[in-house]
Image 1 (cartoon, rainbow, N blue to C red):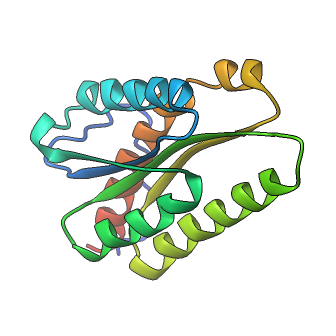
Image 2 (image 1 turned 60 degrees about the horizontal axis):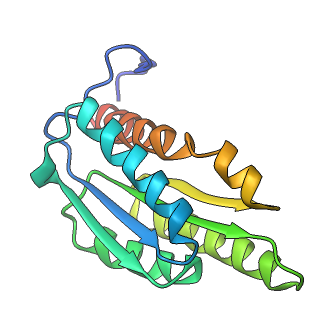
Length: 154
């Protein structure tokens, strides 16, 4: 590690990076839009189609396990979690949001692999629609963190 801080906000390039995406199918009408924005941004950043692997799971609680399997494969430079949890009328919302976020963080720390979390946790459909840019942002975070960890390990 050189001790030099690198900023990637300009000239961010995902060329030669391998990115895995795990998408929850619950609330797919939102998740699909997040995924499309993420994929478009990854491609705009130079990540090749063949270097993006997409996996779907039933819901947000299943995302961490799929991420763990991808992380354990040592085939990826970064991962992205995509989904949407919309508050219902029960406490289940808090459990799903908290446990999926905790699981994602655990996988990231256990494997030393960056995971961009684009699982929206919102009160209603309007909030979800207003946050669709999180898919694009997650792509940028994944690429930037992969490059940052690359620099840190030099």
